Length: 245
Ligand code: ZN
Image (tube, rainbow, N blue to C red; front, side, top):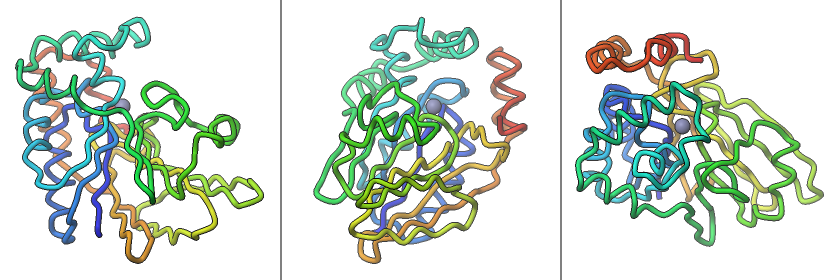
């Protein structure tokens, strides 16, 4: 099975469209979204509708999704994120509010697991480094775990003896998973990357060959920024899309 994997769309429709059309063109049979469909960006309803329209999908909820439907305390967010969440709350249709409320926060099957933040704390915890990853190892009980949340593509490979390698996930990277190792893959962000590269992130996981191919895609950033300006979303959130920070 070929899975298209992406995360942290954050209401950025131009970026989501590019990612989905790329994945469809690659013959993906199923989609995995690691959360945060909304928050920050100008198209929350359109992004949810687009994801709802996918045939085979596995959609996990993120902290901004919960905040946008009143299920997460806004004091956990900085002021600009909070402003965007309050705007998103007003913007969301009743139907899409219900949709976000009903999303699961963890998926596990016999091969892999999916959460937004970390295996230990699926909604809120950020895994930026090996130290936090180590604290999560006892919760990482599948060969592969896909996450988002930090908006920084990276992966950790954990050997049987629990040696950890922290590795970059660059455009075009291919990971061949070894059966005896464990992996935590942060697939980066579709709609607001923060690793200094403004291009949208996505990956294709092939469960037959047990490998993942990671890709960066250019999209129409100015179009998203124009719409953010029209809705008076915070200037810094508009600028950071160009910076990829
Ligand atoms: Zn996010």
